[in-house]
Length: 75
Image (cartoon, rainbow, N blue to C red; front, side, top):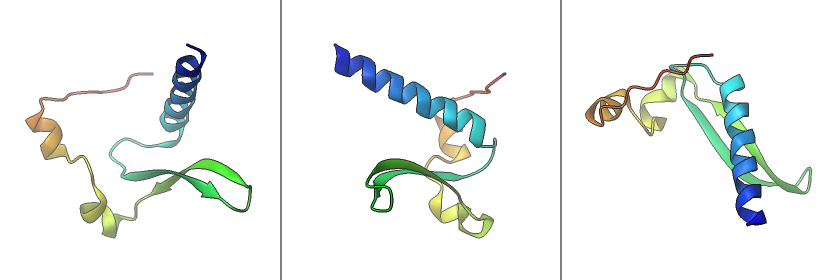
């Protein structure tokens, strides 16, 4: 049970971080990798440059519309 709680706490922290650091309609890459400089795994968030958005978009607006997905976050 403790491991499940730890995973949910980690997910909550990631979601809070994303809410504070991404802008709507932006394309981002979120990566978790080992960083030899700090000697541990960490999360990295990258903003995709406009010229690369088409090729790096994983979930497109068209796909969301096909799924009838309409999510708008309100603070």
